[in-house]
Image 1 (cartoon, rainbow, N blue to C red):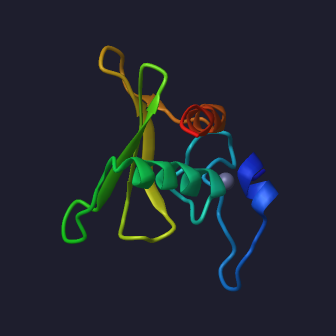
Image 2 (cartoon, rainbow, N blue to C red; image 1 turned 135 degrees about the vertical axis):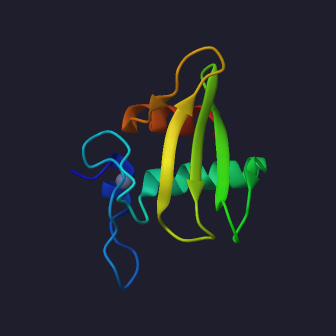
Length: 109
Ligand SMILES: [Zn+2]
């Protein structure tokens, strides 16, 4: 089932259907135009916590989350987010759940 924000948004364009990143509740790299991932990427863009490299490593961005960060990678302005996870300085990295993603959006409004 698509995430809450994908359900709220629906499909607002012609063309390919969105593929939610949180169909299972945990981030999947098989996504396109997921409303939750778009919201997190918009926040990192507004916070200027992104770095763009179209030639090699693609783009990376982060938003603060609790005592750590939601870290994301993507290519150009395309709708797929290739990776997303939670990184802490003093704990192992953790997969990104929809619940954590929504909390990160809430914390950075
Ligand atoms: Zn979604």
